[in-house]
Image 1 (cartoon, rainbow, N blue to C red):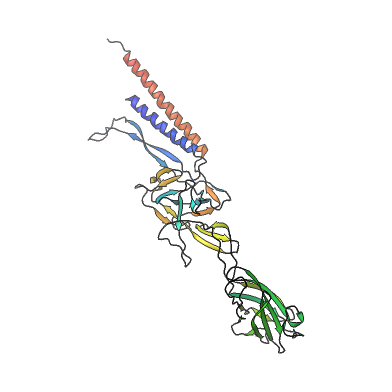
Image 2: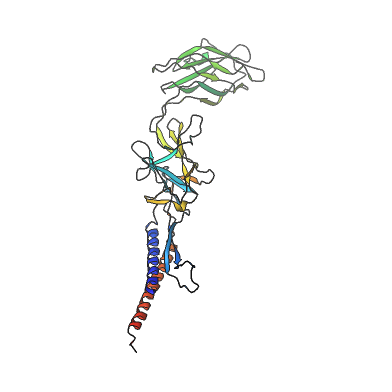
Length: 407
């Protein structure tokens, strides 16, 4: 009997050493969660229960449970590296089979999909036209390498001041090459429907009547439409046009793009003092843009940035959580699968109720503490040695009994 008891102790200590060894082997594995050997004593039972004098039948391994404590987060500088701070798992798809991981060392495959090192596609939520996300179903996240399409300029806002003491030009009509035919001028860059840039030049001519001005638009040196009137009150505020918006007419670029018709907003213009000044100029067009990078927010929203200053929302990283994470089935490759013990996956997003946040450009390391594991290894080794010594002692007693001479 003592042999069997000691042997169960040796087996249990050996399992404990194996668990510790596996933890130490994965001390540098991204997103690894350490395990702990848990033991239970054994008693032989009858219909009447366990006897008060029962010694016990040894020990058994009750479970090797995973410990989902937070690992240290280390900065990597790679925007596609994602670390979870708090609860949750990234969701990946292996040909439709969902797996779960804390390893956020993601990369892009040849088709532009965000994938794990083993090629599984990271799951998320597709963007909606209204700016939200379709949280009703998972989809594989894809980084578009396509260029950002251009947008033709349709409106331009100008904040400026025209000098109230200016005099009418000495000569007329307007000639851009002759400064004596206009009072002041300013320019801005506008874009056609093909993304080509054009120089828009605005000329301002003081009228004979106080507060009256005329403005003329030139694009790439060509006059556009007809001159438009601007009028200011005695307090310097714009009165004409009433809505502050001026359209000179259409301009057809030589690039083959659609005709341009830019509306200029002069609501932020004034007529004060004796100095002409332009405070700001803005317009809503932009040229073609190439992808410069991808940013991922703390809530998992992925945005592509382009050289034309535009950005495009690609989707939102989805997360999953479980009622009992320790019940997840380990699959290797830093992944788990849902099981009966874990309960069904509850999907959500980073920063939501029950979910941690995402740190882009970082990775979560293993939660194995080397010092703790080494101390545990020494303890398990002593348990092993003690049970081995028990076998040796039992063997000595048995030999003594065998060698007792008959009376």
